[in-house]
Length: 122
Image (tube, rainbow, N blue to C red; front, side):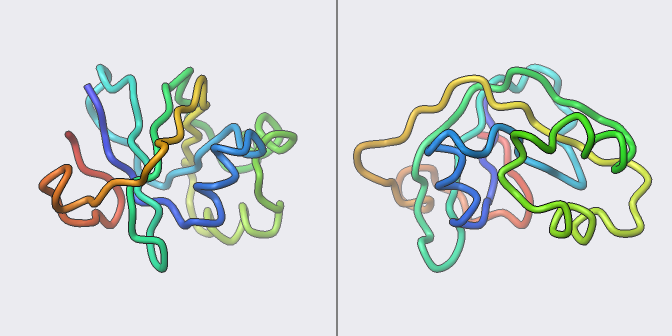
């Protein structure tokens, strides 16, 4: 099963460049059978640019999660702590293998969904 995530273009492209090995989330999907993430690069790109396999999902407090993921986070420590401000629980999706599409796809025409605030099941 797959899920589509909205990711800021800066971070989406870092995933496919191999710089960002973790995608951080305040809320994680509930279905454990999700194995693939389809990446929607949000505004200004507004296109589905690829997908990746999930290696693992790490759930922890922000401090421990940062220590575990910081070397391959693709983000700054400051950004991380601002993102998880006032949160007791943080999630990191560990990226296994990526597949960048040769041609990006339209979220409405190709997936029949609207851009999600967080995620949508496909």
